[in-house]
Every structure is written in structure tokens, then in C-alpha cells.
Length: 54
Image (cartoon, rainbow, N blue to C red; front, side):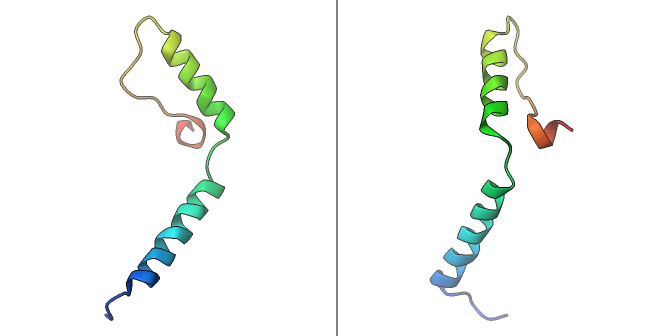
């Protein structure tokens, strides 16, 4: 396997990040979950929001 150049590696990572952002959840859903957690008397250590919650 050929060694990836830094530019190639950067381009692959950038593409992956852009794809993940495009497929991400609505920030409003995340904000609503944060408000619920912050308001909770006994919040759990972790929560699933949006696509992960299904």
C-alpha cells in the first residue's frame, strides 16, 4: 500500500468530517436535550439524541 501524502490524508479526513456534518442531527434537538439534562434533578451520565436515540 502506498504511503499517503499529508495532503491526501488531509483531504480524506476533511471529506469524512463534511459528510458527518451533513448527516448530523438537527442542532435544535441537541439543544433541547441539553436543557432537559441541565434541568434534571438526577441526570444520567450519558444520553443518546436524534439518530442515535432510535
